[in-house]
Image (tube, rainbow, N blue to C red; front, side, top):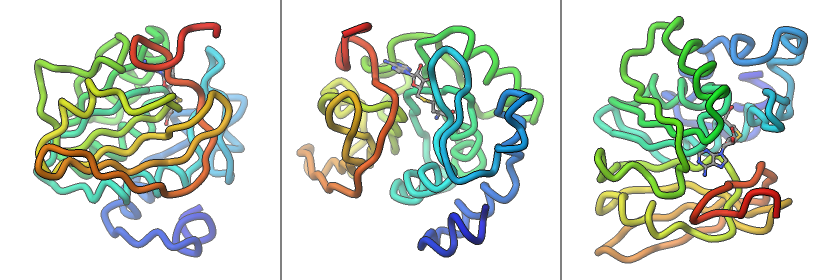
Length: 206
Ligand code: SAH
């Protein structure tokens, strides 16, 4: 996985590569699928949701340019795999998941692996986590119709946010930076994520 899916495709950030080498991805996948845990595609994690493809996790994390002192907000805990990658690299990770069973399972897995710098919440992540803002980095792992202003407001000056923006079934991975309190946007590449459902996202069942 590391060589063919990450290094050969241009992932360079040493901290990202080390984290992906260290974290046992198969522990985040349902038992009957563990033989596919390191394959080059997303996998189902229950409740109609998916764990992202390894390359996607690496590319999103690399674009955030994470520092050791960073406090990061993640929207869409899912399996908790991406959460673990963030927690390996930065100081604190605040992660929100709207589906209770997924959040609880991820928390159990991450506690078992010994992480003590992750804070979990079951809620609509499109409104962010104001109490702990501003964040240095924000990572959204579900596809949004547009950039939730709530999340942009909770980003620190010079902070970065990565978010898939588009329609319900295909999006453009977008990097946002807050410079002089205004929004700088860069389109990265096409992607397909499950929908971000909530007050500033898509309506459930629509
Ligand atoms: N990072 C995860 C990817 C999970 S898929 C992993 O590596 O496993 C995206 C997740 O976003 C799903 O679990 C979905 O339930 C969640 N989600 C969708 N809308 C949300 C919202 N408004 N707030 C929080 N989580 C949301």
